[in-house]
Image 1 (cartoon, rainbow, N blue to C red):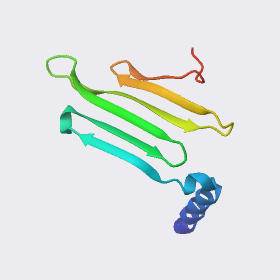
Image 2 (cartoon, rainbow, N blue to C red):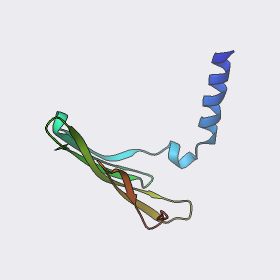
Image 3 (cartoon, rainbow, N blue to C red):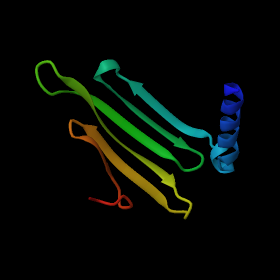
Image 4 (spheres, one colour):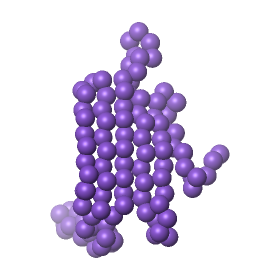
Length: 104
C-alpha cells in the first residue's frame, strides 16, 4: 500500500511539471571545490535559469568558523520577465535581495 501511494505521488509530480522545465539542459557548468576553505560554482540552463555561488571560511572567534555564502540566481517568470535574486548567508542568516521581493 505504501509503495502504491509513493508511486502515485511521484507520478503526480512528473505529470504536473511544465514541459519546458522537464527538457531543460545544462549549457554551462563550473565548479571549484576548495574543501573546508570554500567553493565556487556556476551553471546556466537552456530554459534561462542561472545560478552562481561562492563560499569562504570565516572565523567568528577562536573556536568558531563557518562558511559565508554569497550568490545569485535568475529565472524567467511566466510573464516573460527575468527575475534575479542576490543573497548572502552569514552570521546574520539568509538575506535575499531583489526588486520583486517585498521588504519588511
